[in-house]
Image (cartoon, rainbow, N blue to C red; front, side, top):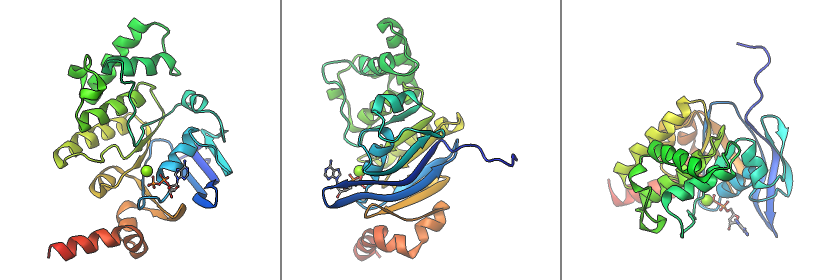
Length: 255
Ligand code: ADP
Ligand code: MG
C-alpha cells in the first residue's frame, strides 16, 4: 500500500444546485476512488439525477466544486467532461429516432474522446459495443422498435462507446423484469472488472447490494449517510427516509 492515496476519480466538494427556492442538491462532499462502484439511493426527488447532471456538466452547480481525476471541471460543458473520460446514461432514454441502433452508437464514437473521424470505422466499433451489451442482432433496427430492456441496453452502449473511466448509470434497471436484471448486473460486473469506476443510481435494492462497494444515501438533496452497503440499508434513518413506506406497504400487503 502506498502512503499517498491515489487521487479519487471523482471528488465533489460542497456541491449544490438550487432551482429557485428549491435546494435539489445541497452540500454534497464525496470521493469515489478509482475502480470503485458507488450505489446512490434515495426516494424520488432526493436529487440523484441532479447530482449526476452536476457531475457530467448537464447542469451547472450553484455552489461547490466537481473534480475529475483531481482536475477542477466545475461548470464545464458536457463534452469537455466526456473528453475527460466521463460517460452517463439518461433516466429518460433519448435515442436519435431517425437512425438505426448501430448509428446511434456510431455517432457517439465519432464525437467521443477516442473517436475516429470515419463513419465506416465508427460503425464497426459500434457493432463491437452492441455485442458487449448483447444487442448486436438489433443493429439494423430503429430505436423505437426496441423493448424497454433493449432500449436500456442501447443507452448503455452509447455510454460505453465513449470508453469511459467513470460511468454514471441513472436507473438503468427501472422497468425491467426480474429476469432482465441479472444480465444488467453481469454487464456492470464485467465493466467493474475492467477497472471502470461506476456510479449506479438505482431503486432495485438487490442490484445495489450485488454491485456496490459503497452506498451513498441522498435525502432532500443532502447526504443522509454513506458506507458499507448492508450497514447503510439497515440504518434505521435510511429505512425511515426511504425504505420505510415501501417495506410497510409490502408487510401490510403480505405477512
Ligand atoms: P431524483 O433523481 O432523486 O428523483 P431529481 O434530481 O430528479 O431527483 O430532482 C430533485 C428535485 O429537483 C426534485 O424536487 C425535482 O422536482 C427538482 N428538479 C430537478 N430538475 C429540475 C429542473 N430542471 N427545474 C426545476 N426543478 C428541478
Ligand atoms: Mg432521477
